[in-house]
Image (cartoon, rainbow, N blue to C red):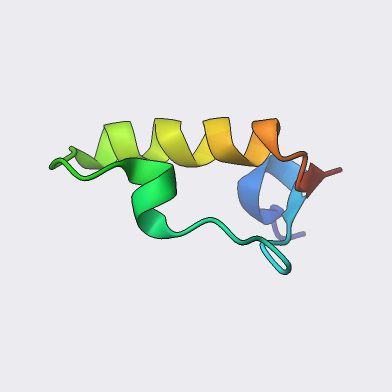
Amino acid sequence: MAKKAFGGYSICFAGQKATLEDVFGKGKLAPSEMTKKIWVFIKKNKIAGK
């Protein structure tokens, strides 16, 4: 049996108005910081469901 992506979460960005700059800011980021900011955005906007 295949493991579900994102630990079983379904994530839908449809209908979001935020730009990448809104999510990440204007500065350079390490990949780990990008991941953290994406999850903050997902949780803040309640776009992840189980």
